[in-house]
Length: 54
Image (cartoon, rainbow, N blue to C red):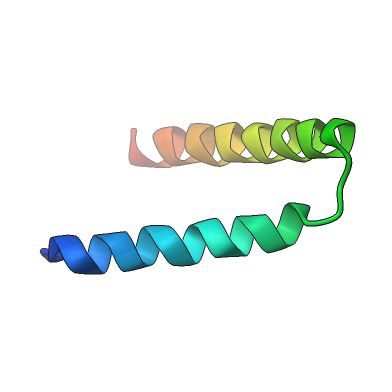
């Protein structure tokens, strides 16, 4: 599946708006905690995929 550049930009912008809403009103410390948790979740998901595809 190929996606045109303009579609990629639209997807990126929707993602940025979504994240902005998630962290809206949070303090800097709360935002840092948010990103730590999201990073941990992503790493766990990535490890599971590697195990399944092996």
